[in-house]
Structure formats: C-alpha cells, structure tokens
Amino acid sequence: MNIADRSLALVDLALRRRFAFVGLEPRLGQVWRDWVVKECAVHPGLVADIERRIAELNDQIAADARLGKQFRIGHSYVTPAHRLEAGDTKKWFLQVVETEIGPLLDEYWFDAPDEAQKAIARLTQGW
Image (cartoon, rainbow, N blue to C red):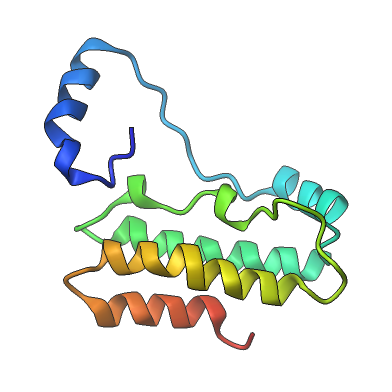
C-alpha cells in the first residue's frame, strides 16, 4: 500500500494489524549502478551523479517531519526502461524529474511549493 495516499490511513492501519509487513529501503548502490551502466549504457560518472542527487533528496525527505523516510524516492524512478542512446542520459533524467519526480514533490510539499521547487532545482542543477 502506498502510504503517501493519506486518505487510506484507516485501511492501512487495519491491514497492518492483521498482516506482517517487510520494510523496503531505496537501494541505489553498487548493484544498481552496475546494472544501469551495463544494461542501459549510461556513463558511470552520470550514474554516480544521479545516485548522489537522489540520495540528497532522500535525506531531505527523511528529515522532513511532515514526510519521513517512508516517502523517499526509490530506484524505479531513475532506472531507464530501455538502453539509452549515447548522450541521452541527461535528457532522460531531466524528463524523469519533470514528469515523475517533480509532480510527486509538488504533491509531497503541497503546502510549501517553494520547498518543492528548490528540491527540483537541486536535482537538475548544472544539467
């Protein structure tokens, strides 16, 4: 269940009382880096930069009392669905931020739009 959807909080509570749950952590580590480099043809330096940007965003999200660690961004957002052409990595990442991560951050910080925009700007800074 996506706990980001607060309207389901009572259903979530009922399910958690009846079933065991396993927590999953965002994993943008060596296995992810190796896979993206090999399978998606992304330059290792760009993969490391994307990992750093997402890690910094996740630190900000986890430290926010309104959100917390359960709202962090996982690897599915930054794993290309197909092999990228040479030189397309930055374009692909900017599109992911614009169409997927950015709207999610706007929703997370609906009451603080400046905070969402600053986080989006940090993700794309220099690209």
